[in-house]
Length: 396
Ligand code: HGY
Ligand code: MN
Ligand code: MN
Image (cartoon, rainbow, N blue to C red; front, side):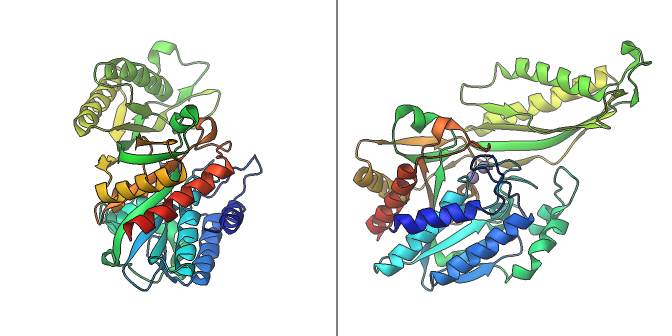
């Protein structure tokens, strides 16, 4: 591999949507910086001798001529994201494709999936490509501002070439930052992923009565924020009997209407998300979410609505691809790597419906991600790509 060329490209990708705070980026799916980044990536793919194709979702492919391994990740970011989440996997794939071609190695195709970060759903672009979600269903999903996907994706219409056939790919490998504390704390350089957790994600709404914050006695209020607060407290209590130390749940988005200091909020829309490696536990948690919210709504005489339940099942990584990554890890970081599960979701989950998949992690400094502070040591970034280069040789 050419480490300098790889790091230069990775840093250049950061310039699209650079936040001005540290190395952070603001590059949500279909935003101007996201589209500009995709156009720049398309040029890099073409320069590497790959055929550029973009499907209707905006998933961007650089295709090898022959049947090939597919490598990549996503180049959209969270509303406040780091420079490596997704970007690392895309630029690493590009570097592996380039260096493999230059040295007579196996053919490698490259992808940057769209909306992995779920402006509209959960890993939306790869979910549609892999047939987990139809384009018609996806088009109805809305972001937190109420914009439907079908409208947002007009912005990439000029780039679309058509559907990309998955049968040309022999497997998919995704390099990603860990986004958690495990490798950073252990001092190891590489994680070979064993499996990816499952997720459930749902919008919920409590609707009460908007009213005056000075004149409305407490016992007469139908305050939507108070309902969310009571729901959250009850939920934490009830989850206790069901969850394990690796189960996680999050209310990450809350919108109060009309969101003013002197108005009792009449409406609260919020996101409810939970993740676990066990499907039964995910369903038991769903039942608790629904029952708890219904009880709170009834007690407080408020309306309650659930949005569509989005989700991805837990998946196990392919044994053969994983073995190749382990051999590569042992070549590059002998004794300084481990096998580990992924608590973050990845496009690899969707792609596993179509072909064997595997994933590789490098450490996240301080275990921080989905934040401007996200970073990884340069030596670890380069080590990750080197493991990929070794792994494709072992596979070939
Ligand atoms: O939320 C996730 O795990 C992923 O980064 N979208
Ligand atoms: Mn990611
Ligand atoms: Mn992410």
